[in-house]
Image 1 (cartoon, helix red, strand yellow):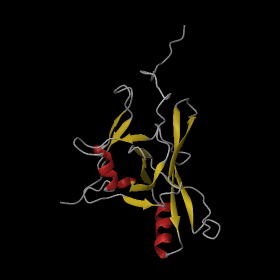
Image 2 (tube, rainbow, N blue to C red):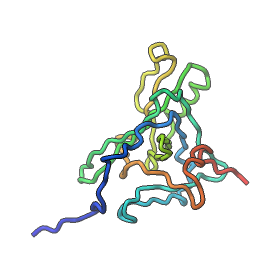
Image 3 (tube, helix red, strand yellow):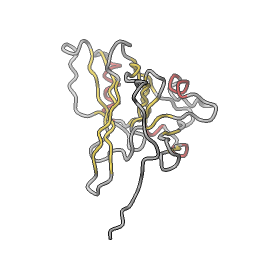
Length: 197
């Protein structure tokens, strides 16, 4: 008889019968250069560690900050999503996607697009219930192919940052957990900044 390996099991049910969950993101995101996160501070908790938990903590390197991107509050340009597939060996893997808005053709807009196209980022998005999600924490996100057309795009273009095809994430996007005594919303509002002394 074959022995089945069990890597994870359900530890609870889920009741979505009465209270609808949050389903809209605030139209803002914080982009963090992946190399600005202090890897020694990353603390991840998943269900195999604590039942019902799926979160991540981290601190940026001293003197580093994330960068806030904002859009019109009535818009729907700032969105997070993920796609689940399986690796060739049968392990689940996830392609993280985070969409932001860039507008205009100023030098500043072009410099930002240039940085997004060449960099690797961890992206925080905030749902309207206050939950902060973290995308790309393990391998980072970068821009894919896009068409930037301000005339047909109302002055700007939604830009999608995604996991690379050959470097997907091993886990779902995490819920951000602040350090003891902290606040996820306060950290998001402060761009996760770790000021130099």
